[in-house]
Length: 160
Image (cartoon, rainbow, N blue to C red; front, side, top):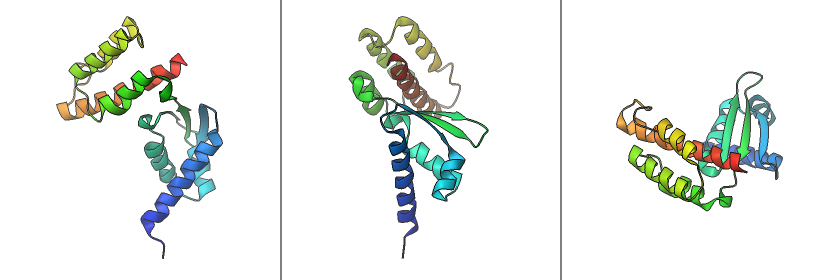
């Protein structure tokens, strides 16, 4: 008897391994959710689950969704090991929530270490400010953490 959770884990593992094998040493790959779902005989929502849980920015990936045409997605691998400062910040310092004060402290550190310039500092500071995120505090800090991590990963990608 096969347990449903075990079956789902195996399908997820298979999808993840297939994507990683297809990606190989390349830093980018474009995939079609529908084609993958058809290939694995599963629902597109299973593909979405794998993409969300196994190819997140916490795991070193940036996802760019493209609407239409079967719902393609571009995965971009960011080698976080190349920049220990940003790696430490993303994986250890930020977490699931980030206050405006802490965000500014992290930005100041990045600026002082030459990872970002004053212009980038100002733009990111503005994007994650309390004024820009008009939500309840609990939601604001979660959204700020996600935006902040995503911006830092994009900066890493651009500096390659």
